Image 1 (cartoon, rainbow, N blue to C red):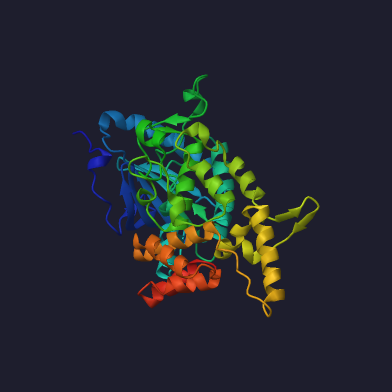
Image 2: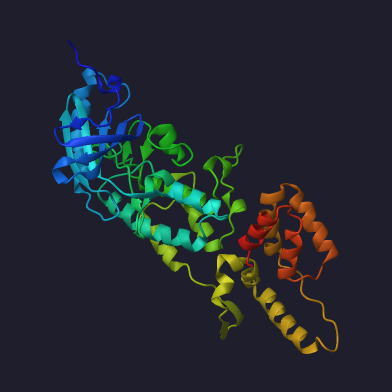
Length: 413
């Protein structure tokens, strides 16, 4: 009698003892490549571990042997990964016609869950947090790619923060996502891409070449990491951050970050693979180059502004550094105002256009398309208002007091 294919086998029930060692606790997830279980290892004092059943969709008896060989080769590759921010590969075995991987269990929260918790507090991840998060994860990708492995499924659900620790962990290096032998598929005309496999990856996070052609490279993972970064910054699903007609990213509308970080993220998110960063090290170098800007008042003099000016919460003010003329006008106008305030009225400089645009974008989140009209009306009635007063006036247009407070908090107040 022909044995069942892995696809038709039922889910393993809780309490089942596998390989006379692992006790199944519960199903953690399942997809086209198989199922994932939380289990206890009875030979390691019931230590928690992740048991992954490899059962590709459409696998019959005729193709099982081919997948068995692939499984063993890829398990060997996973065994080579020894990194503190990657779950340890513990074992692989075959039992009852099923193929299994055993990996370290990470006790913590996914970044999808962490983002949800922040949003309930009225905020998303800040620019500083995302920059540090990228700096913590890029060396992990660099390490993985050096082993000729492409993760293929980076998203907030597959990055975790372990309980009591500060460094994120990249999870779900499941069988079927790795490259068995890079030399088998590399040709003189195909150097950028390092594999062609069946579709793996989440729509919205995976780049077009991966979704459409199954082609992957280190730049594919960098793209997915970039998408994850803008999701953390904006708190929005990727489908809401891309124009449905042009298929261009418009994430900047929902997050106010410095141009330096924005340019790095846009390069990670480039649609064409050859326009993206090719390796993680390139992104790391550019992130390290991000420095606090300075206002040049003359070829020989540099004025350092306070650190708070360059904090994202104060970006509306820091927009004055866009040009020498704007900075000089603001500084000298402020000095003149303080000296002559008792003798004559001096007009304050008008609000910076970048600041006004940012306020409009933030207000639109709370009151919708009317934001543009409201901003214009307030400016017309208060042409020489200060940034502080301007924000207060805008906040009064938000009916909900809590939302109004969060609006002001989202700016530089």
